[in-house]
View 1 (cartoon, rainbow, N blue to C red):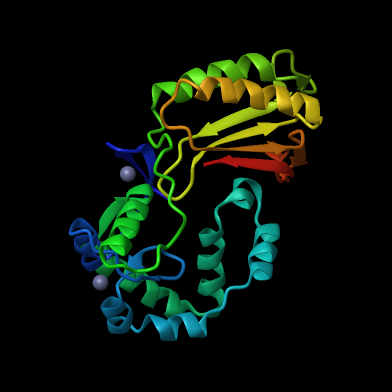
View 2 (tube, rainbow, N blue to C red):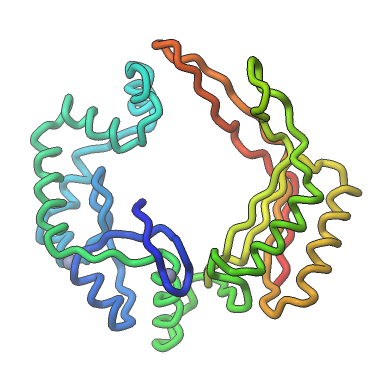
Length: 263
Ligand SMILES: [Zn+2]
Ligand SMILES: [Zn+2]
C-alpha cells in the first residue's frame, strides 16, 4: 500500500480508487466499492459494471497454494516478493489475455484516480452512517490518540523502552547485532481501533501486571485514554539460506497471550 502524510493521522497507508469514489469521499459520502484483482484499486459499482470486472473475477481464481508453489520456484530476492508479483506470473502462464485486460482496466481507472488516507476513509464512513441513521459500520473509538507523530506516543515509548530493556540474543558471527526476544511497539489508533501497545516476551502474569500499572499511570495525565494492550510470546526468528548463499532472517508469526482494551 502506498503511504501518504495525512494532517490528522501522520504517515499512514492510503488507498487508490476511481475518481467517482474519490469525489464522493470528498463530499463526505461513503459508497460501496469493489476491488480490481491483482492491481489493487477500488472502484464504484458503475466502473465495476462498465469494465465487466465480475466476469474477470469469476474466471480467475488464484489460490494460495499456487502462489506458494510459484514462490518455491523463484530464486534469490524474488522469493520474498509480494503476492501480486506471483499472481501476475500465474496469470501470464494461464490466462495472459485476462492479465492484459486487468492491466488495461487499471490504466483506465488510474488516469483519474484519487488516493485517500485509510484512517480518513474510516472516519468518513462512520460520519456518513451517523448522518443517514445507518447501522454503525464498527464500534467507534473517539477518545484515542490518532496521530502517529503525537508527542505522548513518544513519551510512552521511552517509558516502555526502560522496562522492556530489549533482552536480546547475540547473532552468530556478529559482535553488535542482537535478535530481540523482548520488545514493544506503539501504534496510533483511528476511529476504528484504539491506540495499540504490543508487548513481546513478557509471559509471566506478574511482569505483565507491572507493565500494565506503568501504562495505567502514564494515561492518568493523558486526556485521550482509549487503548489496547496486547501481550505476545517472545519474538522468534527464522533463519533461511537462499540458493545464492544470501542469508535471510524473518520474524516468526506472533503468538498472542492476552489482550486488554480500555474504552
Ligand atoms: Zn467509478
Ligand atoms: Zn487521515
